[in-house]
Image 1 (spheres, rainbow, N blue to C red):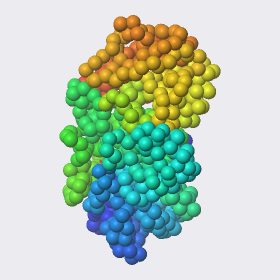
Image 2 (image 1 turned 120 degrees about the vertical axis):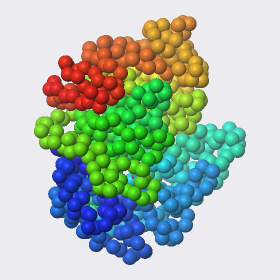
Image 3 (image 1 turned 180 degrees about the vertical axis):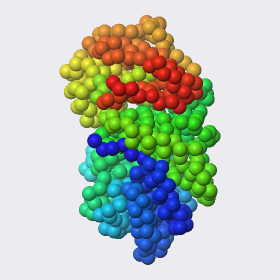
Image 4 (image 1 turned 135 degrees about the horizontal axis):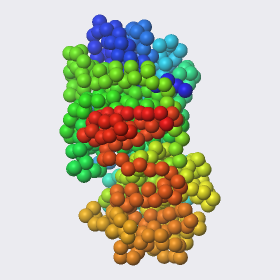
Length: 634
Ligand code: GAL
């Protein structure tokens, strides 16, 4: 078992060299093991074309390593210096309005640009040759946060050319592409694949099949861009290769990119995300203002555990107020500790705080670190030190096997983003609603990639909103012994974004056909007979399938074939809570009645409780204060 460790993100190039040794000593003293450096340092490594300065980086790595720290070296490809742009003026990504996304911040590149990929190949090769076997470099990070700042999709001429090549490989001929996309509609047929443009700036909406193909292509570009770096690094190092993914970033298939890497990591900013990345009532956002949403971190821990095939980290952990959300409150005292322990309870190998010292200059000067800009401790430093002491005292807890899985699928997110049919049909929102209900019932959850899910490991699976049910899931459902909750909108599209015939959901043993779908504004609810309601989405049915629950006006709400249940709409929280508890009861899976904001995660050896609520709760006869963590042996 890999030991649990703490890390920190550090930018030696931001500080006078005289300060490095003291910083390193303080990191080690705090109990930090890992230090990530270098991911934005290209202009200091190669200030001018082919003029290199590796000396400072050599010294920085030595100073950190000599203090006993393990270095994670980032490839600097998220921040190409200006001279690279001078060489490749057309390397910038282009937004949907056709405007270049200019130099002056970061991620100013198009994934498809051949010239930029060559620059990346060059700098990554040099770094890999120099540091691949360095005794202090123990892991590598590729680039930084693929997709951050909405950068997966680019409408540049480089992307257009690469998209044509991608289409030629996939469809082989314009005729086949026309048939696959249904281009006879509105006379959109192409004579040549070289006539195909990108699906932006059209008069009205472009063909959803065109958009979906472009989304698949864009995801592949991220995978290929990352793979280029991986292939170079593998030739020079046997250290683990990692990427730091984001929260609620669905524009590329992380399972696909992650398959080339050894460890998945993600950047967890709970308070920033509560304010700008999740749908919740004003009351919820106020209650969890200084703690973050009680399920958002856990969801991503479970998702990235799957992406990393069991090996995952938090590469960046929020330590205090951030700078980028609409409002930036400070965490409750104790949250920087709680977030770390929660990650470890979900199986993280490392939690690395972002960043060591708050920078007094540039874009993130209002972003807290473990130290203030004057090097005095910021509140999270003592919490990190506490976690380090606790880790040293507590035996490894391992990862629990859980009987409950949530199936997740990036292409479904693209399908519903392409054709939502109702303004608030959002795949993440639906999936997260299901996940939250599982967590409110005290369950530990595995999130699994729908495309290669092994259902036999679970007694209960939830698979909301899978646009195209992967063949392997369909086959396993035919003989699945557990309880499966599917729908709404399952199997509603072919991979080419057409309505399949036979009509959806076309599930084994379920004689039910969606005869009509409707989307609803947020104010509307369709109440269910046993409590709760459907919102946002509702499907009407034909067929002889058993109706196990109806709406209060008598229409089918849940259709069942044995233990396979199809939801005809989007359950609200009350309905989801009830469905989860009923399904668990049927499978003999124990659930809990948790006070609002208390969450549980089981490990192989211990049960952990996390109090996200702003008031104390009692667990096992113990009073858990706000931000309190409690564990006991199972
Ligand atoms: C992340 C990013 C970091 C830093 C941080 C601030 O998205 O990877 O470089 O910008 O956010 O919260």
